[in-house]
Image (cartoon, rainbow over all chains, first blue to last red; front, side, top):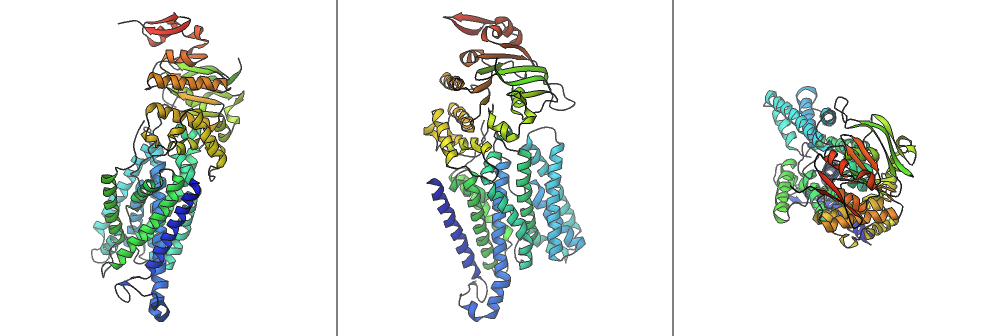
Length: 333
Length: 259
């Protein structure tokens, strides 16, 4: 009975996200601010082009971005047994940002080169964090990775700082800064198809292993006694989610708070078990990011960087959750 | 003695260059009985349980389950045979008691498989066996220490293992809850299950166990029946404090000398 009612809720959520997507197609600043009449799609060729070549890839990428960040956030929070972890953790966001900066300054400003460089450095940061954690001889698995993640993030942040300092203030620095603020303003179908395989692989793996994630949130000795192959299962989940997040970060820039706040909201609404909270978080994350991007491209005549909006809304929601209910997690034992 | 678990000449250290935690340790655990492992702090009791579980690998010696080496079993086989109630189990997320106990079914599920009706029924039975069906929907982080320990034991029940390893299951519990947990272990041995528990409390061990193991400095100081192991001499030597073993109405009790 319980299962059925949750399936219905999930279906309802999925329809909700679909409705948001459909409505978002008509939200924008053409031909006038905020709303485009659906009739115009059949009359105005420019409107057709706009929807087909600009809005649709952008909306679908926003959906993937939100789903991936929420899935990755949920998995990382549970696997690291830490409710304050997000996909940027383990140096991935800073690594990807550094990769983009390297490309803008020294390699090529072609979007594909920037994306490849950002994905490469994002994954490199993950690898460095992992390798460093295997060399630390104290603390448990979680503490070692947290320490390595902090150190690797700091290294790449310092690298970004240096690159900003030496960037040409008239040409390179504005592009770099805008990229770091995060946004989907330049997304095309090519970008969407670049991230699609990464995103699908990440989302499918997490969805398939959603019940198993609960097991990985237990103490090492308990999880082991319950038959989990700890290293293998953790590595599969981390690599799949983090590489999806890195690929999307390569297109969107650093979009923070989605991966942190959405899993919290999902757990509060659907309970702690990842079997329910992860699929729900993916849908909530997708819907949230599409709405945030609608606001980013519509509110002002100029684009507001998406990263700024998600931070503002996410932090606001987080403060509200903390004050009104207390964050519903506890260290015990 | 029909032994279900045996350790043969086990040597263990955490790092190649660190001192031995266990040295040339050999031990047999009888099948269908409650075995209590006693010993001072830091003597290697938890390490021993982790080796029995297969979580830690000895660098010398071998562990046998039902006469076969650990290495001959797959991870899945072992997790269907041996369950663990650890000393500390911090659960950072608010699973309901039912959701948590259901995790005991994972050794029977593939990585991508969800628990089915059968698993749900077994979990409900496990909660009933431990007498905590009424806690089913409560969050695990919002129940008392005694209830928490029963929840951990229910999880092992739902795992349906023949062997249970319990690391200090009665630590920090009041007398009523200690009694509840130890009676449950005793009851399980009547159903043919084997329990191995570590404890600091010799009286708790006497209350529940059929077989006793006394550890000291990474090795076995004594193992056997109650009167062979729980003696004033053995305990006083190992705990380095004067200890008396008294008989009251045929019941053995361990007491410390009054200060």
